[in-house]
Image 1 (cartoon, helix red, strand yellow):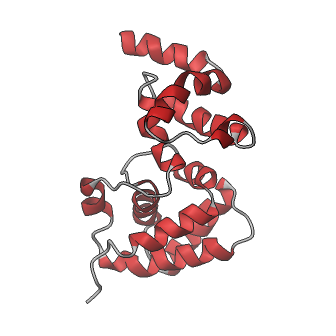
Image 2 (tube, rainbow, N blue to C red):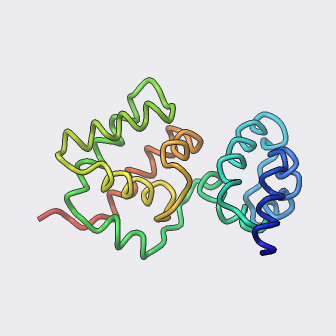
Length: 173
């Protein structure tokens, strides 16, 4: 019951206040950048707003925000085994990385349309590519809405992480 009450309190707090409350923990974990205090404050507020519905305690923010704040992804072995173990995903992930690298738009709606088009082109269920992309980009099997996550992580990191994930897939035979 206390978790629920805490979650309700977090939901009511503005993102800017939550950023102030979690800054010490982000600093402690080496995830804080002084840019978050100025030029990237609005971006960090957007990340916090995306994460808020999933969290019951402030200490969860650091863990949940990590894929947005680091350049290196820490992969959950279970997520990799479940969603990046099919060699048939290699070509669709490579195509997705190429499409996202050259695509003009990088909004959640554009990202979703692009991913679904790549899945169709490769005669793959969109869900399989969505799950593989989530693991490739966040290192985790669960996250907030994938397309909003991709938009906030940004084109450069997303493309880099997708290309790195290709090295995790088994070699096609």
